[in-house]
Structures are given as C-alpha cells and as structure tokens.
Length: 388
Image (tube, rainbow, N blue to C red; front, side, top):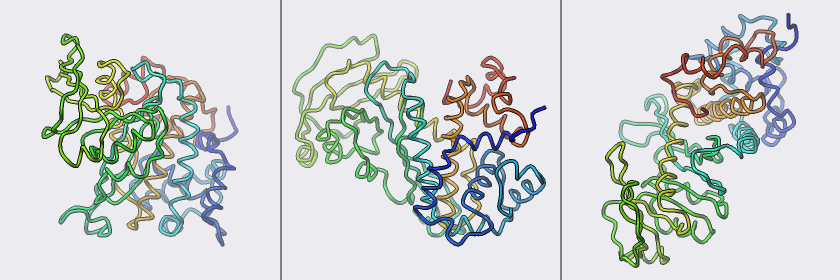
C-alpha cells in the first residue's frame, strides 16, 4: 500500500515553488500573515475547482472532514471560511495572475510540437473574449447594461495544444477591440480574429509589426479590386483577390493592399469572406486556419462547464479575479501534468478522476492507469475535449 503523499499533494508538486513564492513576495501576499498563507489559499481554491464546491462553507466543511489528510496534502493553515473570505478579498489577485503566466509559459513549451490540423511552422493564435455573467444586485461594480453585470475574459489561445498565451479579465463594458492595444505582437505569427476586432488602424499596427492576421469582413465592406487569382471552386473557395480599401477612413488607416478570400462551407452552407495581409499561404489554408479559431470557443466552453467560474465565493472585484485566475491555473496545471506523465486522457477525464481520488495515498500516475483512450470516449462521449 502506498503510504506517501496524497494525489492532491503530488498534483500540486508540479507548481514550481520558487516561482510561486516570487509571485507572493512581489505583491507582499504573506506580509504579517501567521496562520493562513497564500499557499493555503491557493490549495483551498484549487481543491474547490477540482471538486466543484459551491460555497465557502462547502469548502470549509469538506476540507475539515478530511482531518489529518490535510497536513499530508500540504495544508498548514487553519481552514475556516472567514480566513478564506478575507484572503480572497484582500490579497492581490495579481499573485495568481502571475502564477498562471508562469504555468502558461511552461505549458506552451511542452505543447510547442503539437499538431492542430494545419501544417504550419509559424505560431498561430486565436483571439477572442467571453462574458462571465454576474448578478447585478450582488456585483453592482460590474454593470455593463441597464440590467446586466459581468466581466470579460480576453484570451489569446495558442492553437498548438490549446494553451492560452495571454489572458486578461476586464469589466464587460470594455470592448474587446482594445485588447489589440495591449498585445505584445510576435513577428511572423498569425492572429485569427472574428469581426468584432475589425479596426483597420489597429490591424495596420500588426502589419507594421511584421505579423499576419486573418479576420472576417463586414457586409458593408467597400473596396477596390486590384487583381484576382484563379481558384478551385470544388474546394469551397469562391474568390482570391488583392484589394485596396475604398472608404475614406479605412483607406487612411490601412493604406496597404489586402487579400480578400471568399469561401463557402459545404457542411453548414454558410459563406464567409476573409481579409488577411498574408499573400504567401495557399488560399485554402487561410480558410482552414479560420476554422481552427473554433478552438478558442471550445476553451471557453470547457472552462465554464468544468471549472467553477459561474458562481463566485466573494463579491469584490479582487475576489472574482482571484477565483478566475486560480481556475485558469488549474486548467493549465492539468495540461502540464497530462504532458509530463505522457497521458492520453482528455482534461475532462483527468478532472473527473481527480475529483474522486484527490486524497488517496497512491502514485499520481496510478490514479489514471485504469483508464485508456478507448474507455475515455465511453465515459464522456458528450463532453468537449480540447486534447484528443
């Protein structure tokens, strides 16, 4: 019988302790703290994410029921809902935002060689945002319409491995297009966006930074045709044109030529028009790349379905952002463990197994050893899988 660490402790050992303490010290998270450290706070919140706890009282009750197992799982502070509530309210959420960035950097290295369906050497990103709805009466600081409240999670997803390269949590009233002002653009990379990001002044900055973009055009789009290339209509392509913008302000903000590609999806019978500044990639590859943008939608759905970011344990902006960043950290941690252990399981299956085995004392790899790829589909055939 294995008498060492619990599964939970082994899982948390994949978080680099040195980097975690750097994040804590950067924002003085443990200043004058004696009984409930930032590490205890993170463990409680990670436990809540992995087991789907509904409230602070729920977290306290379940953890206290584990008794001596808490010590062997890394908990050192006194577990009380008041301690956790105070920590979520007062400790800077940037501690966990920075930790998430550390884990994201590690995960991106691990998944750098992953195939996402298109054979490309360039790093390819999908940029999008999702709204996390909040109750207006409980979160009045998050109002963005007369009867609505919420925050937006802006995400730049690396399509290799579906690992977020950039995440920011902002009030929902801030339009997603402002994300383009904050991105650190990588030369030679490809950025895939929907129509909500169509701003020719900002797109021209990507052009000047020697990056590429693929974005859908609006219906009222005016242009002047410069040239047209032959295409194979049997593949769904409808046109491949070189154009210039015709309207005054778009032409002023984006003076360079653009490539306009028309495509009809045979499966959905929908027609699409894409704009890109990449004149080198084959026309069909451009259409296939835009289709890969759906991965960021799957990421949002996975996060909302399988992690606890619809109900919140605190009401302040700091508490909400702390919970969201720890949820993201848990997601990326599962992706890291999956790659480090060489598992063929989806993150959904891993999360379900961990929710039942967190405080068993057996090797972490053994906890997943009885599930194989064929069993996985039978268990969760109706679930979203980012890692097939």
